[in-house]
Image: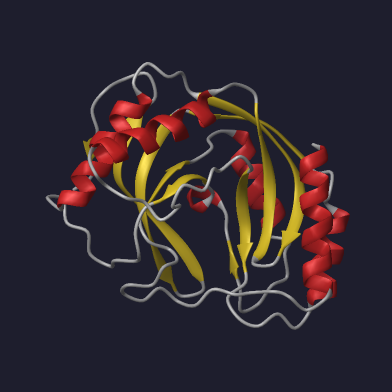
Length: 228
């Protein structure tokens, strides 16, 4: 939790000193918002996150809730609008994820703490077991064995989170965003189970982001399940 407190302090400083960044709508070949390996929380935690995010007064920005909420294992490629079922990379991602997830139990994590950061607002994900870290390591190895590169370029994701807001335009009210985060800094969303690993792609629908599942694997089983 001390690491999260440090992250939150740096995020506050970044916004209050005018160092916010923002995302642009998805376009072909852009580095952001391409296909990714993720897990999506299930249960009452999702409703609690969604309800809180809905209180964010952030016109012009992307507020997330429901099935959009996710924990990223790995960013995989630049943005592509169309990723067909028989796409070789999609097939490799699905096979690597199935290999990585085999015999792993569902991940369990405690979700607590709200923090601003240069690109938006997130909630801390605090693992209660080794599944997230093991899955990340296995997946990286399975991709490497297939000679498939991801976009993380060796970066180790040792800080887990769920984003509830991405800035989608220059930030004009940083103080208000920081004030909202401060008011919910110690928010407790409870324990979540993450039983399904997925390969997903993202799409912008008006002012919201949609997450579309391409492949899925239930932790503890083998074999990807393509979505047609």
